[in-house]
Structures are given as C-alpha cells and as structure tokens.
Image (cartoon, rainbow, N blue to C red):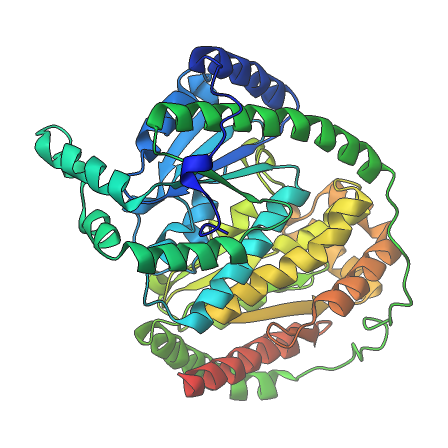
Length: 486
C-alpha cells in the first residue's frame, strides 16, 4: 500500500485552494456537526519529522475552539497498566465535537519493529472493533498517513537540530527511522494494509511539501465530513424504522429452581471461610497484576448490593472500586454508551465492581425505549467484543445474574416500604408492570452474551443467603483458575 505510493507523482487536487478558505469552510461544517450531534475523529499518523504538527496547526486554525481537542498519543506510555485501547477511550470526543489525534492508538505499533506478531494481531482486531463501534454510532473517522522520502526526512531532522527552539522535536525515533528507512517502510506498509478498513480507510499524503500536504488534509477532511454528514442522516432515518428479528430464545429464567436455599446454620458454617479465601485470592490477583471486572445484574431488589458487600468483606478496600450504574449524566449521554464503563475499568491488579453495567443497553434501555431496536440489537456484538478485549488482555471477567421470582420481589418491595422507604420508588413499582418484557430481554441477553471467554453465572436469588454463598464460590473458582494460568 505505502510501497506502491509514488511520492513524486502525488497529485494534490486542492493545490490551487487557499488554506484559509478551506479552513473556514471546514469550520462551517463543524457547526453542522455540532447541531446534529455528529462526532468527528481525525488521526494524523506518519513518519517522524514528516510535518504532523505543521498540518495539524492549519487543520484547527479556523475551528471553534470550544468544540475541538487535540490529543498527543505519542506522549502516552505503550503500557500504562491498562488494556491497549484505554488511552483512546479516555480521549473520545463528545457528540458534535472534533477530536484531532497527533498520532493515535496506532502510534506504538507503527514505531515498534520488533512487536510480537500474536499481540499485534489482537491489537489490530481490537482497533477494528473499536472503529466499527464508533462508525455504527455515527462518528466520522478520518485517518491520514504522512509519507516522505528518506532524503526529505533527513533534511527535516537536520533543520530541526540546527534550530535552538525546535531541536527538541528530534527524538531517537526520528533518527532510527531515517537510518533504517527501508525496514520501517516495509513495516508501515504492512500495518497500513492490515488496518485499511472499509469504514475507516487510510488517506496517504505526500509531505515532501508541507504546505501542499496541509492543503490536501484540509480539503480531504472537508470532503469526507460533507459526504458523511449526508450519509449519517440517511442511516439515522433507516435505523429508526429498523426492526429486530425475533428468535426462538430459550426461557433460561423460567427453567431455574428458585426454591434453592440455605438455613442459617449452613450459611454461618460457610460464609466466613469463603470470605477469607476470597480475600486471599484478591491479594494474589493484586500481586500478580491481574485486573478483575465483576458485573452484577438482576431484577430490582434481587439482592445485588448485599451480595457485593459479602463478597468484599475481607478484600482490601484500597484494591477495588464500586461503580453503581444509574441513569447516565448529561456528559455520559454526550458520548458512546460504553464510554463511561471503559473509563471505569480497572488497571492491573485492581478490581472494578459494577452494580448494574453496560447490560442496561439490552435491558432497561431496550424495554423502556431509550435505545431504538437497531442500537440495542447491535449492542450484543459490541459488548462481546469489549469483554473479549478484556480477557485477551488477561483480565478476570465474572458476570453474575441474580434472579428472583415476581412474588419474591413484591414481598421485598413491601418490606422496603416499611423498613427502608429510601430504597423504593414509584419507578420500581412501575417496572413490575413490564415484568414479562424484562424476562424476555434477560433471556435474550443470556442467549447472546454467554460466551466462553466471559460466561454468565446465573444464581437463584429467592434465598439471599444461598445467593451470597454462590457469588463467593464463583469468585473463588474463577480466581483460582486464572491464577493457575499465570
């Protein structure tokens, strides 16, 4: 791909345009994106000393400063104690905003000639999934790669070194690339070919002439944004009328024996030993740097909070965070629905507990109509991909679903009204009217997301003691398994 690109034959169709005119027109379409809540991500990759900063400055010069942000991924560590795409999710633009990346999540792969081939394949798959998630959420993705000759790169390096104010721009990477130009050319060519996705293709630009490259990037960005705005309008209209195809989903919830239980003596005989064992295993996970993600789902009043408290009783509070998931804030609504969860996933050795989670997309948002059928239908794939990214990284992912009967829920609601009225709302009672809709959603969720890498642990919850013991047993079993692998 890159090796076939003829630098000297590059034709810039925007050569006769003025950069200021192109910039002002781009600012006009930036306002349209703001009005229509369309986020735009522009990635500027390329050789070191190829003029990325030069073209970036021209790109943002006329944009509304309140609605764009420049992020420099080059300055971020290759391994920052999180899964690979964590840095990218941190810098995800809000709806209607522009995000310009000086380098991107591709940077470390581009600059590592000795990368592990298996790890690289996994990362490419993760980036592909990520770009698909963004594309499906109506984000405009634009990727540029600045290409230059060895001679032009050497000249730029020498010019920077001679300047007291700019010599800091030359790093070891610049010099190494120029000295091993052919090796890097072959490496770039392979990576560009592997990541030239239909939904987000690479635009290769000659940067032999920095001013010409700047015009091209401005013009091409403008062209893509204009065409994508129209395309997104059409897609949104089609998606609003899209219908989810019904399947013969097995009634997993209906087949459970909700009468399972423990008497007080059995419970007391087991709970303390299990809690100590869980605490010891959590410490082992911490010392080995294994992150853990614990998801708790279930009907209202199913006992998730109590189960979480018993699980964490002997685990060091400094090693975990609890994330209670309620209705998204205005800031969270301005981002992809997974954004708030990605930004609360744990770093190496820590535990993140989610009291409700991203599965709200295919349950509450589905049943209550907060997401249309196209949005929640595609969420099964997006969620599976996210959890696969975590387990590929080496994280422990445990998903609990605590199930109670409709009759048991009513008893617990009435008890709450008397003893803990702050824990019951009119909305809780209203949701009971849609009990069957929620059961259907839960069954389909289990059917579509019970994967080999992140299976569900479905727990009969009519007896709280039984459910709490089962939560601890599952944590112990899964933690022991992953520790044996490490």
